[in-house]
Image (cartoon, rainbow, N blue to C red; front, side, top):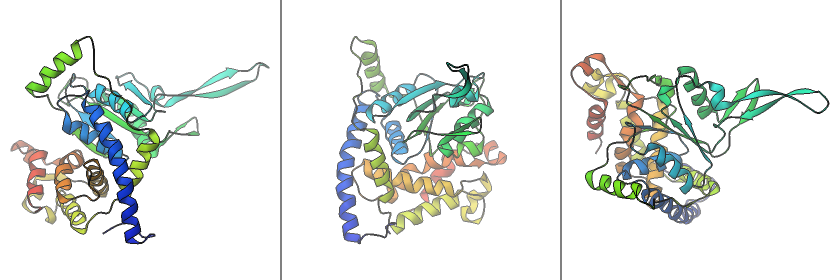
Length: 336
């Protein structure tokens, strides 16, 4: 089932294949460049790239010191994006991110307001430790993410294109964190867990990062290349079986009859935005792997990072030791 109708199927397929082959070369070069700097986090790198290729925003969750900041900085270089970083703290104000109006006096004594843009006016924004800022500041950024513009003193200011946020979040058990509300978590296309590296990767990190020469990323794409890749992702055809798998998975992750016995464990589940996210990320994963159409394997691989921040378990289920990861694994097992 292809979701584009204006061209004949043969011409459309030829055009997609030609574009996809060229784009895959760029994207794979970017992935290799990032992997040369970030060791032992292949899955994290792939999922972060998929998030950007899908046109979305990502939430990286992990304890400090796992190269989350370095990953975003390296991605900015590899993808040819203007990248900036904001360290979130409890006293950070919305104007520190969005920008503010300042009163200036001209040569003739005439006064006027001038807008000074904040760090959100970047193509790739690193929101470091987003859950350390107050809810008011969090919501200012998340509104900009959703609407692609900011409004200051009644005037609208459009954000650059492309615009992506990769936010990092410390585990919620840590001191001084403000959990993101559910509606704001839903703005993130994927939640990507950043875990500790294995022994060999950590050994490589030790030698590479403490020597005289440290690996540096090189630009493999431009912002224009990336936007062309994002347009291509939306043109990739999606088979009926993949669409059905997405719908079955998302609908069964909600409390109610479609979840069966697992429905009793789920307090609330993902809305249609999760289905939209899944259909985009499976196309992006296919493109990243040199395929021109996604498969059910792509759905199963990316189900957890798309769904887990969009659902919650009941108190009784949590008391019995159930986790969202286990519930999603059982839902995935129902799909052949």
